[in-house]
Amino acid sequence: MEDIDVEVPKYFICPISLQIMRDPVTAITGITYDRESIEQWLLKGKSTNCPVTQQPLPTVSDLTPNHTLRRLIQAWCNENASLGVDRIPTPKPSIDKFHFLKLIKQLQHPDSKMKALKELDLLAAKNERNRKYMVEAGVPKAMLSFIVNCFKEDCVSGLEEALSVLFLIRIPSTEAKLLPKQNDQIIKSLIWVLGCEFNTQVMVKSHAVSALKSIIETASSVVLERLEPKFFEMIVGVLKQCTTRITQQGINSALHVLLDACPWGRNRLMMVESGAVSALIELELGSPEKRTTELILGILFHLCSCADGRAEFLRHKGGIAVVTKRIMRVSPAADDRAVLILSLISKFSATSWVVHEMLEVGTVTKLCMLLQLDCATYLKEKTMEILRSHSDDWLKFPCIDKTVLTRYIK
Image (cartoon, rainbow, N blue to C red):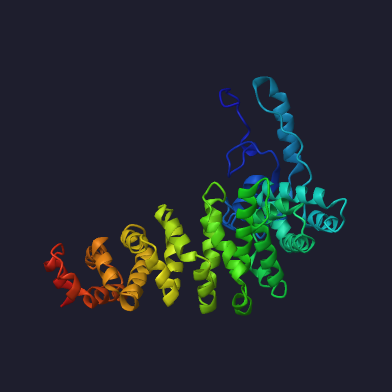
């Protein structure tokens, strides 16, 4: 059609996509758009106003099918088919909330549950409109209940589809907060999934960790205080897997889970015992993306606040070096966490080996360079505190630039 000179009537063109409308719908402002274009406009948050008139548009449910215009477009396309214009089929009736309520009911019956799960998965992947109605119909809660039942029955059939649906529609925070009594069972069920074997191992486990992240970030302190050692063993196990066994998004979700559990001292000790410190350093040595580094340094800061965590950090030969290397290379947030980690090590675990290691891997030089930047006042104070605390030892080494160091310790 692009290579053929056919004059298309202006009122057949969608104001958003600038393409011939396949399913024209009229908004309450009187402007007609292609359904897919205006729904994407509204649901993806570009704006809640009419693109043409800039008047407010309430919801996608206020879009009225323009059957007359659709028939005119179809007739015109048929007349010009010989010129290469594609025919436009009559759109299927749009799916509403009640269709998803029916599918949820079908999950209760053994004969229809797999068919219902597969249809939910396909519809969730299709468009944002379907995902909106699925949330309104209570599909997230239905999927979580299905996963819990699978855990209780030790059955993996349907888990792949249920987790895929959850990943596509997400678990709204408002809905996750309404599940406090079920949180324990949901968390145990998702941890159980991480220990199961699947044909599509990478995606299933990534989706399971993503669901776990949504539950943990809205869980009450009572739930987070009761997390068990196995919980942390499985999450740390995820971090130890290479990206061929879990997606980058899955790794970041696992890091979010650990970070949300860090405020409780009991949880930090269980993380350390499960090998989290070493796993985090190894992950960071792989030079991950910016957000991953920020999450890793955030968790390491919490774990280094306890003696066992610092001991594990120093036991790894790459700990001080990799944290030092990230300063001024990632983001202000990463600089903040890195300096605080070094501050904890410097204050509570500064053996002669540690002091020498900080000089050897360039920590002293990096901290002096950081002071020359326009960083936060408290961060400069922390940096100067580290430099002052061991300056006498560092000045004894011939390799140190005494002029630079003494400039900041006066």
